[in-house]
Length: 96
Image 1 (cartoon, rainbow, N blue to C red):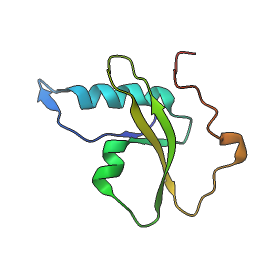
Image 2 (cartoon, one colour):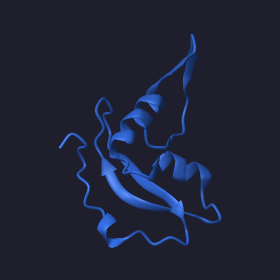
Image 3 (cartoon, rainbow, N blue to C red):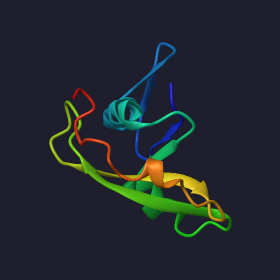
Image 4 (tube, rainbow, N blue to C red):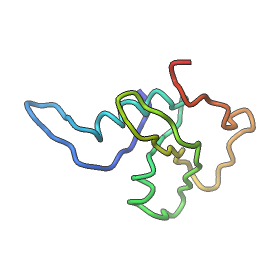
């Protein structure tokens, strides 16, 4: 499973987590490539600028079970330039 960061309320019950935030984080993992850390716009908005970290937008995606598109970002060291082979050619539907 790819690292994913989400921000929002969750419910902890009987040793498990529930809620929209958990659902969104779970769905975002379908978009991550090996070695990527993906974050939602809510995380970017919550943390603001972080020294040494850059958030590269990959665009809005439609997630199963989520009514509104979610803007996703790749979190990476700010001194790293992604290879051209990793340009934003991914589809907005992880099932295709």
